[in-house]
Image 1 (spheres, one colour):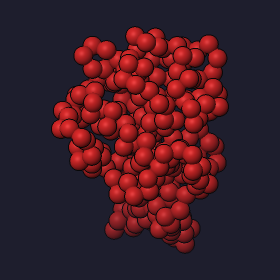
Image 2 (spheres, rainbow, N blue to C red):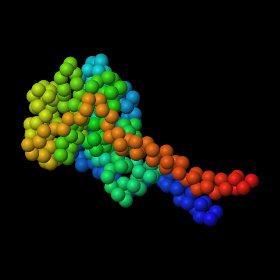
Image 3 (cartoon, rainbow, N blue to C red):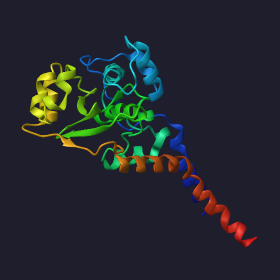
Image 4 (cartoon, rainbow, N blue to C red):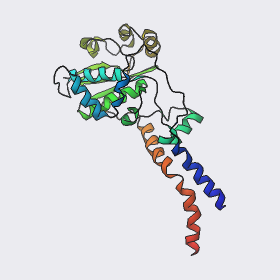
Length: 250
């Protein structure tokens, strides 16, 4: 029994020493905008500071102009592909996704997403909305059959943002009044990723509008935060079971 419990403890501890992922790393297609040097931006605070530094003017962080700058930076910061937890970061989530799928190891924490040069559409939207949340800008998610984007509110009007598939849009194009949540009307702005946009938006679809300022993926966040701690501590439980009976007898 003693050898079994020690073996189980060692088995639960071992994954924490391997900085590897169980999913295939997504490759850069050399079509998207991507600047590898921006990988140094590994926190939302650094993202805001860098956006300030590259602005031609000093925009208020709660302005539409500032949001446009942050969006441009994020287009360069990431290429498309879902970032997932490594064994070292959260082996329970990583193994669960490898065995059962369901995207449970695709990080929904903006600081964790920013550790990687790539991120999926929902992950890039999470980073953008986290910046806007810190600057008290109202936001909401927009869901499509195979895509996920964001709307931000400025001066009582909503504006469309998609840093993942990088549409070429003017400020006016982004205004909800000019597209009215009609997915088909967005496709013309996706010159480099038109085929992906056609698939992502579907045909004759209306965007599914999320609640204003809603926390993104709350169930996934709860699972990932819980399993992140369990991944680091679970190995202690067999040792506690091993030691506890001895203390009881004494």
